[in-house]
Length: 202
Image 1 (cartoon, one colour):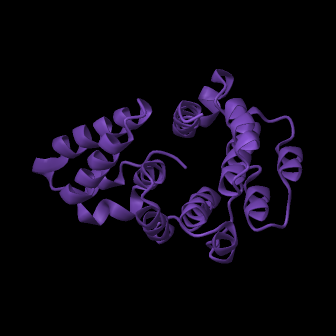
Image 2 (spheres, rainbow, N blue to C red):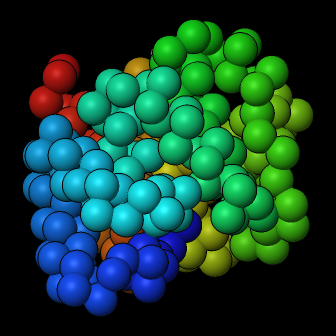
């Protein structure tokens, strides 16, 4: 997933500066693990430009950490309409359903995904579908630093969805390592926030 500024093109000119400022604040609040403030900010972006709502996958991630799993699920279902080839979208949707209902329901509701050429995204999708193991995902990542970041991140999230707390924490620590900052971008920030929140609850 990558940061999208599409919503700015959908906001009336007079509101674009306000929309950008609200978006930037929502992202900053998320980065600081101020989850409720972040969700309020992303919700405000949607109020400023309702047509931007499907593009705001960042809002879906914030909703996950806020425990608003039904809203989280709806956000990723909406995002699929504008980004149907993103495995990460299906993975986060799975997590929302798994936490709200069960991993079995989440697997049954796994969103279909078009071609996502990024390594190891096809293996990540197959892992969430129960067709591959975390070890398979790591093997597919090979020696690529970026691929290894995403492998550790989504193995961690998959383990969390299954309630495997120790494995999830071990993998998210690897994903949150500063060496992956340039590889993961926004998603590396997500890994750091995830680690901060989960360590706080131990």
